[in-house]
Length: 362
Ligand SMILES: Cc1cc2nc3c(=O)[nH]c(=O)nc-3n(C[C@H](O)[C@H](O)[C@H](O)COP(=O)(O)O)c2cc1C
Image (cartoon, rainbow, N blue to C red; front, side, top):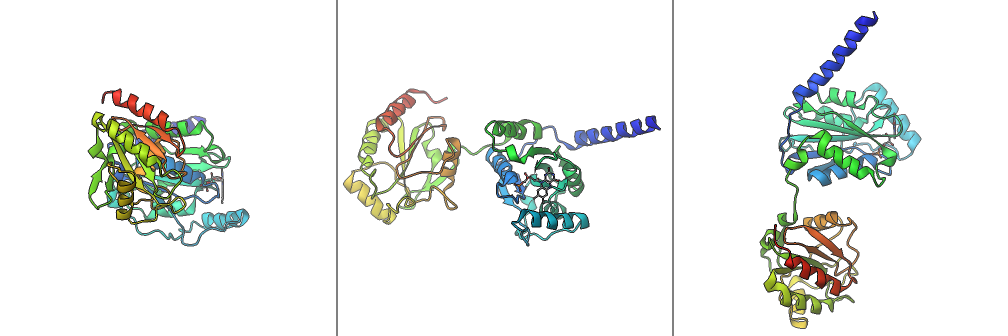
């Protein structure tokens, strides 16, 4: 009897292992835009959302928050009661999301909190209705104290039509934000989930952005390849506005040596850049005789922020831009070297520009 049980267990283990071996491609080569990071998150702290955002950050995939048509009660006990009822009855909850065009993706990360030992109903509904035929699915979970429990098993059942389902990963919700966890989560994204994934994914870099000049012409950051570039969000009616004088001096002095400056007017701080693009340009060129390139007015924080600013912040301390005349200095290889706050020393800035100009392009 015991022997038969042992055989059965061994066989089951072998079946699981061999199904991974057969299913999981050795190396997934995928463009960032073909990765979907879908997640459901309920609690105020948004543990699953946090992991999803890290995955998005490291893969540059597209983020999708799964939203049930009827949101769960905010009250914990009421939520528990509703979730338990749904999970016990196996009902598929309706989702409020727009239909997803699955043709656009090859890899789908699916994240969910552990609810009663299994995948939460909204994430389950998403998987059940997804067209997974030629997709690689990567489940991830956060939990209170129970660990993975049946989350992986149930997600695999729901995703059985997928081309491959990679081993799931579960994270303890309460500690996902602890300092040393990001490294571990990043390691998971890079190595365990998709061997070589990170190496083959082309992560967006400084040279991947398009801007518009104040007079409507397309400006690509790739136009500045090989230069030392300073990106500044400016305003014309700010206490720091006189910095324009020093910026123009820097530009004059170092432009020939490979220094570039991108002026991005922004009205988000004290509404201190109120004019039209043309008015702002006239002000800067007549008052401060500026000669460096100026873009159209942009948002640098919030829902409408331009992609370049998302990138610059993620590459430095991730904090929102605090005020006008924050500066990002980029070296000749497109690496964001330093963020200077509005009042930081312009002498220090100049010193760093000088030393970066001396470094050759790799
Ligand atoms: C309805 C409900 C049921 C839960 N059931 C479990 C469970 O069975 N096992 C467990 O470890 N955690 C359980 N938790 C805790 C969550 O899995 C955990 O807090 C998770 O990190 C929350 O993720 P979120 O912030 O993305 O919502 C439950 C939470 C809720 C709200």
